[in-house]
Image 1 (cartoon, rainbow, N blue to C red):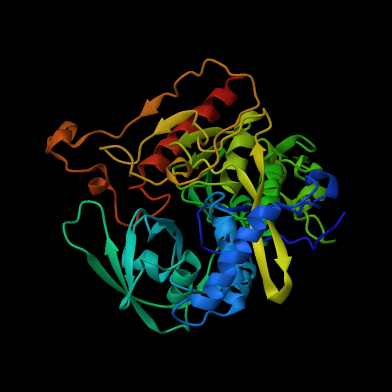
Image 2 (cartoon, one colour):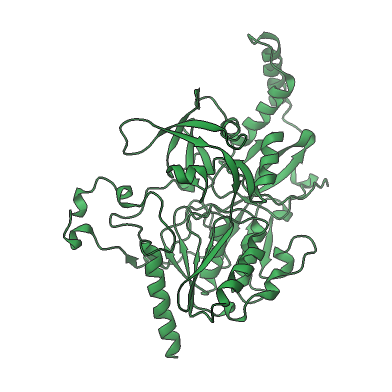
Length: 469
Protein backbone atom coordinates (compact mmCIF):
# COMPACT_ATOMS: atom_id res chain seq x y z
CA UNK A 1 0.00 0.00 0.00
CA UNK A 2 1.41 3.36 -0.97
CA UNK A 3 0.63 6.35 1.21
CA UNK A 4 1.02 9.99 0.36
CA UNK A 5 1.40 13.19 2.26
CA UNK A 6 -1.86 14.61 3.62
CA UNK A 7 -2.82 18.13 2.64
CA UNK A 8 -5.82 20.28 3.56
CA UNK A 9 -6.31 22.91 0.93
CA UNK A 10 -8.99 25.29 -0.30
CA UNK A 11 -10.12 25.80 -3.86
CA UNK A 12 -7.88 28.77 -4.63
CA UNK A 13 -10.34 30.48 -6.94
CA UNK A 14 -10.80 27.96 -9.75
CA UNK A 15 -14.27 26.39 -9.44
CA UNK A 16 -16.91 27.24 -6.90
CA UNK A 17 -17.14 25.12 -3.84
CA UNK A 18 -14.29 22.67 -4.25
CA UNK A 19 -14.17 20.81 -0.95
CA UNK A 20 -10.77 19.41 0.03
CA UNK A 21 -10.60 16.40 2.31
CA UNK A 22 -8.82 16.12 5.63
CA UNK A 23 -6.66 13.34 4.25
CA UNK A 24 -5.70 11.78 0.97
CA UNK A 25 -6.89 8.20 0.58
CA UNK A 26 -4.15 5.60 0.54
CA UNK A 27 -4.90 3.70 -2.65
CA UNK A 28 -4.37 0.00 -1.96
CA UNK A 29 -3.09 -2.38 -4.60
CA UNK A 30 -6.20 -4.54 -4.08
CA UNK A 31 -8.36 -1.65 -5.33
CA UNK A 32 -6.61 -1.67 -8.71
CA UNK A 33 -7.41 -4.37 -11.25
CA UNK A 34 -4.28 -6.34 -12.20
CA UNK A 35 -2.63 -5.58 -15.49
CA UNK A 36 -2.40 -2.45 -17.59
CA UNK A 37 -4.29 -1.70 -20.83
CA UNK A 38 -1.25 -2.54 -22.95
CA UNK A 39 -2.89 -1.94 -26.34
CA UNK A 40 -4.23 1.46 -25.23
CA UNK A 41 -0.82 2.42 -23.83
CA UNK A 42 0.78 1.36 -27.09
CA UNK A 43 -1.62 3.68 -28.94
CA UNK A 44 -0.74 6.47 -26.53
CA UNK A 45 2.97 5.87 -27.16
CA UNK A 46 2.43 5.98 -30.92
CA UNK A 47 0.55 9.30 -30.70
CA UNK A 48 3.27 10.66 -28.42
CA UNK A 49 5.95 9.59 -30.91
CA UNK A 50 4.04 11.06 -33.87
CA UNK A 51 3.75 14.44 -32.15
CA UNK A 52 7.37 14.33 -31.06
CA UNK A 53 8.65 13.59 -34.55
CA UNK A 54 6.21 15.28 -36.87
CA UNK A 55 4.55 18.27 -35.21
CA UNK A 56 5.28 21.51 -37.05
CA UNK A 57 7.24 22.91 -34.09
CA UNK A 58 9.27 21.16 -31.38
CA UNK A 59 7.28 20.30 -28.24
CA UNK A 60 8.94 19.69 -24.87
CA UNK A 61 8.43 16.24 -23.36
CA UNK A 62 7.47 17.81 -20.04
CA UNK A 63 4.71 19.87 -21.65
CA UNK A 64 3.30 16.88 -23.53
CA UNK A 65 3.15 14.76 -20.38
CA UNK A 66 1.56 17.61 -18.39
CA UNK A 67 -1.08 18.09 -21.10
CA UNK A 68 -1.85 14.38 -21.13
CA UNK A 69 -2.28 14.28 -17.35
CA UNK A 70 -4.42 17.41 -17.48
CA UNK A 71 -6.64 15.86 -20.14
CA UNK A 72 -7.14 12.68 -18.13
CA UNK A 73 -8.33 14.63 -15.10
CA UNK A 74 -10.30 17.45 -16.70
CA UNK A 75 -12.49 14.97 -18.57
CA UNK A 76 -13.57 13.20 -15.38
CA UNK A 77 -15.66 15.93 -13.74
CA UNK A 78 -15.58 19.74 -13.24
CA UNK A 79 -13.46 19.59 -10.08
CA UNK A 80 -10.65 17.11 -10.82
CA UNK A 81 -7.58 18.87 -12.20
CA UNK A 82 -3.83 18.77 -12.76
CA UNK A 83 -2.02 21.49 -10.83
CA UNK A 84 1.28 22.70 -12.22
CA UNK A 85 3.81 24.22 -9.83
CA UNK A 86 2.24 27.70 -9.94
CA UNK A 87 -1.33 26.43 -9.56
CA UNK A 88 -0.34 24.15 -6.68
CA UNK A 89 1.33 27.06 -4.92
CA UNK A 90 -1.73 29.26 -5.49
CA UNK A 91 -3.91 26.55 -3.97
CA UNK A 92 -1.76 26.40 -0.86
CA UNK A 93 -1.61 30.18 -0.53
CA UNK A 94 -5.36 30.55 -1.09
CA UNK A 95 -6.19 28.47 1.99
CA UNK A 96 -4.43 31.03 4.19
CA UNK A 97 -6.83 33.74 3.05
CA UNK A 98 -4.31 35.97 1.25
CA UNK A 99 -3.24 35.92 -2.40
CA UNK A 100 -2.62 38.27 -5.30
CA UNK A 101 -5.15 38.89 -8.06
CA UNK A 102 -8.59 40.28 -8.87
CA UNK A 103 -10.82 38.45 -6.39
CA UNK A 104 -13.11 36.18 -8.42
CA UNK A 105 -14.09 32.52 -8.22
CA UNK A 106 -14.16 31.19 -11.78
CA UNK A 107 -14.95 28.11 -13.86
CA UNK A 108 -15.07 27.29 -17.58
CA UNK A 109 -18.06 27.24 -19.92
CA UNK A 110 -17.89 26.72 -23.69
CA UNK A 111 -14.21 27.67 -23.70
CA UNK A 112 -14.77 30.96 -21.83
CA UNK A 113 -14.04 31.84 -18.22
CA UNK A 114 -17.30 32.05 -16.28
CA UNK A 115 -17.54 34.10 -13.10
CA UNK A 116 -18.96 31.95 -10.32
CA UNK A 117 -18.77 34.68 -7.69
CA UNK A 118 -16.80 37.86 -7.03
CA UNK A 119 -15.18 37.83 -3.59
CA UNK A 120 -16.29 40.58 -1.24
CA UNK A 121 -14.09 43.68 -0.84
CA UNK A 122 -11.89 42.92 -3.87
CA UNK A 123 -11.19 44.76 -7.17
CA UNK A 124 -13.65 42.54 -9.09
CA UNK A 125 -16.37 43.04 -6.49
CA UNK A 126 -15.94 46.82 -6.42
CA UNK A 127 -15.84 47.07 -10.23
CA UNK A 128 -19.24 45.40 -10.53
CA UNK A 129 -18.23 42.02 -11.96
CA UNK A 130 -21.29 39.77 -11.66
CA UNK A 131 -22.01 36.08 -11.20
CA UNK A 132 -22.55 34.56 -14.64
CA UNK A 133 -20.33 37.03 -16.53
CA UNK A 134 -18.34 35.35 -19.31
CA UNK A 135 -14.77 36.59 -19.75
CA UNK A 136 -13.79 36.28 -23.43
CA UNK A 137 -10.65 38.45 -23.49
CA UNK A 138 -7.78 39.18 -21.09
CA UNK A 139 -6.02 42.35 -22.25
CA UNK A 140 -5.51 41.48 -25.92
CA UNK A 141 -5.46 37.71 -25.45
CA UNK A 142 -8.60 35.73 -26.45
CA UNK A 143 -9.68 33.30 -23.74
CA UNK A 144 -10.74 30.67 -26.29
CA UNK A 145 -7.96 28.12 -26.45
CA UNK A 146 -6.63 28.83 -22.94
CA UNK A 147 -6.94 26.33 -20.13
CA UNK A 148 -8.55 27.56 -16.92
CA UNK A 149 -5.15 27.41 -15.24
CA UNK A 150 -3.58 29.60 -17.97
CA UNK A 151 -6.43 32.11 -17.74
CA UNK A 152 -6.09 32.34 -13.96
CA UNK A 153 -2.34 32.91 -14.33
CA UNK A 154 -3.00 35.85 -16.65
CA UNK A 155 -5.45 37.38 -14.18
CA UNK A 156 -3.00 37.07 -11.33
CA UNK A 157 0.01 39.38 -11.17
CA UNK A 158 1.90 41.95 -9.17
CA UNK A 159 -0.19 44.31 -7.05
CA UNK A 160 -0.92 47.73 -8.61
CA UNK A 161 -0.70 46.37 -12.17
CA UNK A 162 -3.82 46.53 -14.33
CA UNK A 163 -5.63 44.17 -16.68
CA UNK A 164 -8.56 44.67 -19.07
CA UNK A 165 -11.36 42.11 -19.02
CA UNK A 166 -13.65 41.71 -22.02
CA UNK A 167 -16.98 40.45 -20.70
CA UNK A 168 -20.22 39.10 -22.16
CA UNK A 169 -23.19 39.66 -19.85
CA UNK A 170 -26.73 38.41 -20.07
CA UNK A 171 -29.08 41.24 -21.03
CA UNK A 172 -26.33 43.38 -22.55
CA UNK A 173 -26.36 43.78 -26.34
CA UNK A 174 -22.66 44.67 -26.54
CA UNK A 175 -19.52 43.30 -24.85
CA UNK A 176 -18.40 45.14 -21.71
CA UNK A 177 -14.86 46.12 -20.82
CA UNK A 178 -13.53 46.50 -17.28
CA UNK A 179 -10.07 47.68 -16.27
CA UNK A 180 -9.12 46.21 -12.91
CA UNK A 181 -6.05 46.94 -10.79
CA UNK A 182 -4.60 43.86 -9.13
CA UNK A 183 -4.02 43.86 -5.40
CA UNK A 184 -3.18 41.46 -2.62
CA UNK A 185 -6.46 39.74 -1.85
CA UNK A 186 -7.01 39.36 1.88
CA UNK A 187 -10.21 37.48 2.42
CA UNK A 188 -11.88 38.18 5.75
CA UNK A 189 -13.36 34.79 6.54
CA UNK A 190 -15.81 35.91 9.25
CA UNK A 191 -17.76 39.14 9.78
CA UNK A 192 -20.28 40.05 12.47
CA UNK A 193 -22.34 42.79 14.08
CA UNK A 194 -25.28 43.43 16.37
CA UNK A 195 -28.12 44.44 14.06
CA UNK A 196 -30.45 45.50 16.85
CA UNK A 197 -30.68 44.88 20.58
CA UNK A 198 -30.46 41.16 21.27
CA UNK A 199 -30.00 40.04 17.66
CA UNK A 200 -26.68 39.21 16.03
CA UNK A 201 -25.47 38.57 12.49
CA UNK A 202 -22.42 36.45 11.68
CA UNK A 203 -21.29 35.96 8.08
CA UNK A 204 -18.79 33.39 6.78
CA UNK A 205 -17.38 34.36 3.38
CA UNK A 206 -15.11 31.30 2.87
CA UNK A 207 -13.94 28.34 4.96
CA UNK A 208 -10.22 28.81 5.59
CA UNK A 209 -7.60 27.68 8.12
CA UNK A 210 -8.59 30.49 10.49
CA UNK A 211 -12.38 30.26 10.11
CA UNK A 212 -13.16 28.36 13.33
CA UNK A 213 -11.05 30.54 15.69
CA UNK A 214 -12.27 33.64 13.84
CA UNK A 215 -15.88 32.53 14.36
CA UNK A 216 -15.28 32.07 18.09
CA UNK A 217 -13.71 35.53 18.33
CA UNK A 218 -16.64 37.15 16.52
CA UNK A 219 -19.24 35.31 18.60
CA UNK A 220 -17.52 36.43 21.81
CA UNK A 221 -17.51 40.02 20.53
CA UNK A 222 -21.22 39.80 19.71
CA UNK A 223 -22.02 38.38 23.15
CA UNK A 224 -20.13 41.21 24.84
CA UNK A 225 -23.07 43.40 23.84
CA UNK A 226 -25.36 41.20 25.95
CA UNK A 227 -27.15 37.85 25.77
CA UNK A 228 -28.57 37.11 22.32
CA UNK A 229 -32.25 36.47 21.62
CA UNK A 230 -31.46 35.28 18.11
CA UNK A 231 -28.60 34.78 15.63
CA UNK A 232 -28.45 34.87 11.82
CA UNK A 233 -25.64 32.77 10.30
CA UNK A 234 -25.17 34.13 6.78
CA UNK A 235 -23.68 31.65 4.28
CA UNK A 236 -24.93 33.33 1.10
CA UNK A 237 -22.37 33.35 -1.73
CA UNK A 238 -19.93 31.33 0.39
CA UNK A 239 -18.21 29.05 -2.19
CA UNK A 240 -16.85 26.61 0.42
CA UNK A 241 -13.27 25.67 1.29
CA UNK A 242 -11.86 23.43 3.99
CA UNK A 243 -13.76 20.41 5.24
CA UNK A 244 -12.47 20.67 8.80
CA UNK A 245 -13.62 24.30 8.85
CA UNK A 246 -17.18 23.21 8.02
CA UNK A 247 -17.06 20.56 10.76
CA UNK A 248 -15.78 23.07 13.31
CA UNK A 249 -18.40 25.68 12.45
CA UNK A 250 -21.15 23.05 12.71
CA UNK A 251 -19.74 21.84 16.03
CA UNK A 252 -19.95 25.37 17.42
CA UNK A 253 -23.75 25.17 17.34
CA UNK A 254 -24.42 21.42 17.76
CA UNK A 255 -24.25 19.11 20.79
CA UNK A 256 -20.93 17.26 21.21
CA UNK A 257 -20.28 14.10 19.20
CA UNK A 258 -23.30 14.24 16.88
CA UNK A 259 -22.73 13.42 13.21
CA UNK A 260 -21.90 16.41 11.00
CA UNK A 261 -21.15 14.78 7.64
CA UNK A 262 -20.08 11.48 6.13
CA UNK A 263 -18.20 10.67 2.94
CA UNK A 264 -18.34 7.61 0.71
CA UNK A 265 -16.09 6.58 -2.18
CA UNK A 266 -14.38 3.53 -3.68
CA UNK A 267 -11.50 3.31 -1.19
CA UNK A 268 -11.77 2.54 2.52
CA UNK A 269 -10.21 5.89 3.41
CA UNK A 270 -12.97 7.63 1.47
CA UNK A 271 -15.64 6.04 3.71
CA UNK A 272 -15.64 8.23 6.81
CA UNK A 273 -17.91 9.85 9.38
CA UNK A 274 -17.09 13.19 10.93
CA UNK A 275 -18.60 14.18 14.26
CA UNK A 276 -18.83 17.39 16.28
CA UNK A 277 -15.66 16.62 18.20
CA UNK A 278 -12.21 18.25 18.33
CA UNK A 279 -10.31 15.43 16.62
CA UNK A 280 -12.44 15.92 13.49
CA UNK A 281 -11.97 19.69 13.14
CA UNK A 282 -8.64 20.50 14.83
CA UNK A 283 -5.49 20.74 12.73
CA UNK A 284 -2.27 19.64 14.37
CA UNK A 285 -2.07 19.89 18.16
CA UNK A 286 -3.65 23.29 18.60
CA UNK A 287 -5.91 24.03 21.54
CA UNK A 288 -9.62 23.67 20.82
CA UNK A 289 -10.94 27.18 20.04
CA UNK A 290 -14.53 26.08 20.76
CA UNK A 291 -13.66 25.78 24.46
CA UNK A 292 -14.04 29.55 24.75
CA UNK A 293 -17.43 29.81 23.03
CA UNK A 294 -20.12 31.80 24.84
CA UNK A 295 -22.37 29.41 26.77
CA UNK A 296 -25.56 30.60 25.08
CA UNK A 297 -24.39 29.76 21.53
CA UNK A 298 -25.55 26.14 21.73
CA UNK A 299 -29.19 27.08 22.34
CA UNK A 300 -29.72 30.54 20.85
CA UNK A 301 -32.52 30.55 18.21
CA UNK A 302 -30.86 30.49 14.78
CA UNK A 303 -31.61 31.15 11.13
CA UNK A 304 -29.12 30.15 8.42
CA UNK A 305 -29.26 32.21 5.20
CA UNK A 306 -28.29 30.43 1.95
CA UNK A 307 -28.59 30.97 -1.80
CA UNK A 308 -27.37 29.58 -5.11
CA UNK A 309 -23.85 30.80 -4.32
CA UNK A 310 -23.67 28.71 -1.12
CA UNK A 311 -21.56 25.68 -2.03
CA UNK A 312 -19.69 22.72 -0.62
CA UNK A 313 -18.51 23.48 2.94
CA UNK A 314 -21.34 25.97 3.46
CA UNK A 315 -23.81 23.29 2.31
CA UNK A 316 -22.33 20.86 4.85
CA UNK A 317 -23.01 23.35 7.65
CA UNK A 318 -26.53 24.12 6.41
CA UNK A 319 -27.32 20.40 5.97
CA UNK A 320 -26.03 19.47 9.44
CA UNK A 321 -27.94 22.23 11.22
CA UNK A 322 -31.07 21.39 9.20
CA UNK A 323 -30.96 17.62 9.86
CA UNK A 324 -30.40 18.16 13.59
CA UNK A 325 -33.20 20.76 13.61
CA UNK A 326 -30.82 23.23 15.19
CA UNK A 327 -31.66 26.12 12.82
CA UNK A 328 -34.19 27.16 10.22
CA UNK A 329 -32.62 27.25 6.75
CA UNK A 330 -33.88 30.30 4.84
CA UNK A 331 -33.22 31.68 1.35
CA UNK A 332 -32.99 29.87 -1.99
CA UNK A 333 -31.68 26.50 -3.23
CA UNK A 334 -27.93 26.06 -2.73
CA UNK A 335 -25.30 25.25 -5.38
CA UNK A 336 -25.33 21.46 -5.06
CA UNK A 337 -21.60 20.69 -4.73
CA UNK A 338 -21.62 17.33 -2.95
CA UNK A 339 -18.25 15.83 -3.89
CA UNK A 340 -14.90 15.76 -2.14
CA UNK A 341 -11.49 16.43 -3.72
CA UNK A 342 -8.19 15.05 -2.45
CA UNK A 343 -4.82 16.55 -3.34
CA UNK A 344 -1.97 14.21 -4.31
CA UNK A 345 1.46 15.90 -4.48
CA UNK A 346 3.64 14.83 -7.41
CA UNK A 347 7.33 15.32 -8.20
CA UNK A 348 8.37 18.80 -9.31
CA UNK A 349 6.04 20.61 -6.88
CA UNK A 350 3.01 19.68 -8.97
CA UNK A 351 -0.12 17.82 -7.84
CA UNK A 352 -3.42 16.36 -8.93
CA UNK A 353 -6.77 17.30 -7.41
CA UNK A 354 -8.93 14.19 -7.67
CA UNK A 355 -12.60 13.69 -6.80
CA UNK A 356 -12.53 10.75 -4.37
CA UNK A 357 -15.90 10.77 -2.58
CA UNK A 358 -19.41 12.12 -2.30
CA UNK A 359 -20.50 13.61 1.00
CA UNK A 360 -23.79 13.09 2.84
CA UNK A 361 -25.70 15.04 5.47
CA UNK A 362 -26.31 13.44 8.91
CA UNK A 363 -29.63 11.96 7.67
CA UNK A 364 -27.87 10.39 4.67
CA UNK A 365 -28.91 12.92 2.04
CA UNK A 366 -26.66 13.46 -0.95
CA UNK A 367 -26.93 17.01 -2.23
CA UNK A 368 -24.75 16.44 -5.31
CA UNK A 369 -26.21 18.37 -8.28
CA UNK A 370 -29.27 19.13 -6.17
CA UNK A 371 -28.37 21.33 -3.20
CA UNK A 372 -29.97 22.07 0.15
CA UNK A 373 -33.64 23.01 -0.03
CA UNK A 374 -34.43 25.80 2.47
CA UNK A 375 -37.11 25.28 5.10
CA UNK A 376 -38.50 28.64 4.02
CA UNK A 377 -37.82 29.96 0.52
CA UNK A 378 -37.25 33.72 0.44
CA UNK A 379 -36.50 35.23 -2.96
CA UNK A 380 -33.99 38.03 -3.41
CA UNK A 381 -36.12 40.58 -5.25
CA UNK A 382 -39.61 41.46 -6.42
CA UNK A 383 -38.94 39.53 -9.63
CA UNK A 384 -37.42 36.49 -7.96
CA UNK A 385 -33.81 35.50 -7.51
CA UNK A 386 -30.87 36.04 -9.84
CA UNK A 387 -30.05 33.33 -12.41
CA UNK A 388 -27.02 31.43 -11.14
CA UNK A 389 -24.83 28.66 -12.45
CA UNK A 390 -25.15 25.58 -10.26
CA UNK A 391 -23.37 22.25 -10.06
CA UNK A 392 -26.01 20.61 -12.27
CA UNK A 393 -25.20 23.16 -15.01
CA UNK A 394 -21.53 22.15 -15.18
CA UNK A 395 -20.43 19.74 -17.89
CA UNK A 396 -19.54 16.22 -16.69
CA UNK A 397 -20.95 16.85 -13.20
CA UNK A 398 -21.43 13.79 -11.00
CA UNK A 399 -25.00 12.60 -10.72
CA UNK A 400 -26.83 12.61 -7.40
CA UNK A 401 -26.70 9.27 -5.57
CA UNK A 402 -28.80 9.69 -2.44
CA UNK A 403 -28.70 6.99 0.24
CA UNK A 404 -31.54 8.07 2.48
CA UNK A 405 -35.02 6.57 1.92
CA UNK A 406 -36.97 8.71 -0.49
CA UNK A 407 -39.80 10.62 1.19
CA UNK A 408 -42.66 12.57 -0.28
CA UNK A 409 -41.07 16.02 -0.24
CA UNK A 410 -43.23 18.86 0.99
CA UNK A 411 -42.65 22.12 -0.85
CA UNK A 412 -41.05 24.77 1.31
CA UNK A 413 -43.18 27.84 1.98
CA UNK A 414 -42.19 30.73 -0.27
CA UNK A 415 -41.92 34.32 0.90
CA UNK A 416 -41.64 36.94 -1.84
CA UNK A 417 -41.04 40.68 -1.57
CA UNK A 418 -43.89 43.02 -2.42
CA UNK A 419 -43.98 43.62 -6.16
CA UNK A 420 -43.60 47.07 -7.63
CA UNK A 421 -47.23 46.93 -8.68
CA UNK A 422 -48.23 46.70 -5.00
CA UNK A 423 -46.27 49.87 -4.41
CA UNK A 424 -48.13 51.70 -7.15
CA UNK A 425 -45.23 51.53 -9.58
CA UNK A 426 -44.69 49.52 -12.77
CA UNK A 427 -45.97 45.95 -12.71
CA UNK A 428 -43.91 42.78 -12.50
CA UNK A 429 -44.62 41.82 -16.09
CA UNK A 430 -42.97 45.00 -17.36
CA UNK A 431 -39.63 44.07 -15.84
CA UNK A 432 -37.08 42.70 -18.33
CA UNK A 433 -35.28 40.35 -16.00
CA UNK A 434 -35.16 39.36 -12.36
CA UNK A 435 -31.56 40.50 -12.14
CA UNK A 436 -32.51 44.08 -12.98
CA UNK A 437 -34.01 44.65 -9.53
CA UNK A 438 -31.05 43.22 -7.65
CA UNK A 439 -28.59 45.79 -6.29
CA UNK A 440 -25.26 45.51 -8.07
CA UNK A 441 -23.60 45.07 -4.69
CA UNK A 442 -26.03 44.44 -1.85
CA UNK A 443 -24.86 45.46 1.60
CA UNK A 444 -25.39 42.36 3.68
CA UNK A 445 -27.57 42.69 6.79
CA UNK A 446 -28.71 46.17 5.76
CA UNK A 447 -32.28 47.50 5.68
CA UNK A 448 -32.25 46.89 1.90
CA UNK A 449 -31.33 43.21 2.41
CA UNK A 450 -34.79 41.69 2.10
CA UNK A 451 -33.76 38.12 2.85
CA UNK A 452 -31.95 39.19 6.00
CA UNK A 453 -34.85 41.31 7.19
CA UNK A 454 -37.22 38.36 6.76
CA UNK A 455 -34.76 36.11 8.64
CA UNK A 456 -34.71 38.67 11.46
CA UNK A 457 -38.52 38.72 11.58
CA UNK A 458 -38.51 34.92 11.72
CA UNK A 459 -36.04 34.96 14.61
CA UNK A 460 -38.25 37.31 16.58
CA UNK A 461 -41.15 34.93 16.05
CA UNK A 462 -39.06 31.96 17.22
CA UNK A 463 -38.00 33.89 20.33
CA UNK A 464 -41.63 34.71 21.17
CA UNK A 465 -42.65 31.06 20.71
CA UNK A 466 -39.85 29.85 22.99
CA UNK A 467 -40.91 32.39 25.61
CA UNK A 468 -44.39 30.88 25.70
CA UNK A 469 -43.16 27.35 26.43
